[in-house]
Amino acid sequence: MPKRRANGEGNIRKRKDGRWEGRYTAGYDPESGKRIIKNVLGKTQAEVKEKLKTAISESQQLDVSKAGAYTVSSWMKTWYEVYAEPRIRPNTKAYYTNYIENHIIPEIGSIPLDKLTARDIQQFYTNLKKSGRLIRTELYGAGLSDQTVRGIHTTLHAALDKAVEEKLIFRNPADSCKLPPVKGREMKVLTPEEIQRLLIQARED
Image 1 (cartoon, helix red, strand yellow):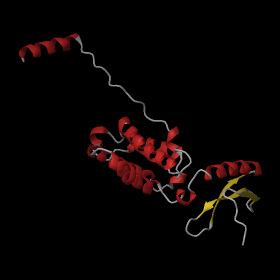
Image 2 (spheres, rainbow, N blue to C red; image 1 turned 45 degrees about the vertical axis):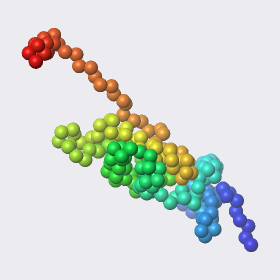
Image 3 (cartoon, helix red, strand yellow; image 1 turned 120 degrees about the horizontal axis):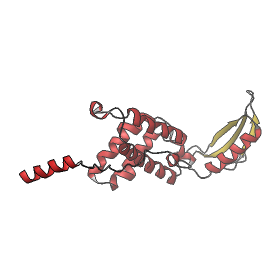
Image 4 (cartoon, rainbow, N blue to C red; image 1 turned 90 degrees about the horizontal axis):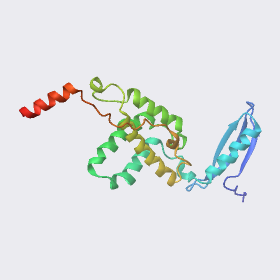
């Protein structure tokens, strides 16, 4: 019987194209029992050795039999149905479904969950600010408000946090994204003339 390679064991070789490749056993398929092989690439042996060390360390903290099974779209739907919907108030559901179905899934839903990067998410937020509004653009412009972008981030971040907890991804890529600042309402100061008109109108009323 062939020796079963230890989970996380890897090896390094030089490819025909000149690059170095590190291959490692990330786990075993629960149904077939076959090894799940993954790889890292680099220009030098030292670079690949470091990448391989990191990849093996991360793989040992993931459920590799499930980690590659989701796209952002399928995970968002699962997260909402299983974890979010049972706990939120009915009037909050409309916000969640709008954020997920009209913004998150159309823009980044096709990306494999374990391949989603902070750069992908940051670009997504930038696009929302530029052209994310779907209705009433003639009144409010093409971009979404800072408050709405922050709401979408809160939803996405919560779903990715749960993915980390479920060992589907190693870390939450939304952690390092820069968000629009929270702006307080600016106080409007009335001029003496406006105050006088207000007082006159109050007396008349």
